[in-house]
Image (tube, rainbow, N blue to C red; front, side, top):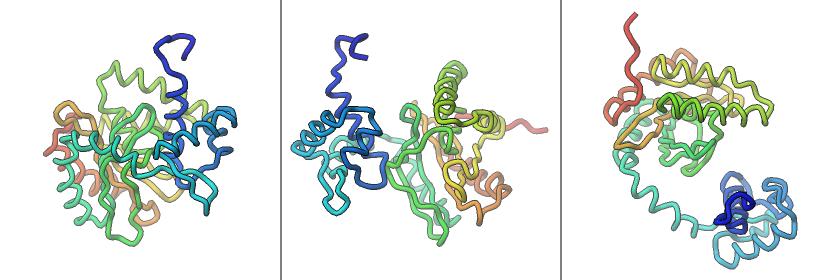
Length: 256
């Protein structure tokens, strides 16, 4: 990138890659872990983690012998969330939906080839799937990812699908089932996936467009407790009702 763009600051990009790697991990990471994830030299990683520690963005967890993010990172992310008007509008509906179904509900947005949960309401059911605000998933393994792809205008959708297919190829995955999920979402208004992210976990998602912001309303479920039929009917219909209030993206399916 630096060879092609003289304005590109390689050292800044490397530092941000450390923060991104830590944000995707569910446990502290050592310098060796970070080197594997970023492809950077161990000496470079050591300098970057030292600098980020001095600045207060990461800290060493001595119990795990690895680095983790600090609350200081919230000073970067909170202003973004505060400006998301859709988040404020969606939260009471997510709370109502979670209370009615007992399931976890969430609002997700796209970040390149990932989706990020910007709001999460934990379900009361014992088997409700637990998500974390700020958590990330790759687009092809999530219902929200399929819904957000389906919501895009045709030209943008084709370009993004090309990138997703390339990403899936690199990860040794077949793109056909994901493409079928996107097509079904455009046809039926909801994306349904089962056992793509983890065995035993699925999700239903419906896209919305509110004041120019694309997002996805989603309900993750334990597939051993919630049938695919329930996902496609009861839960999908509940999400579509909320989407209709906030601003649906996809037109309702045509009557047969």
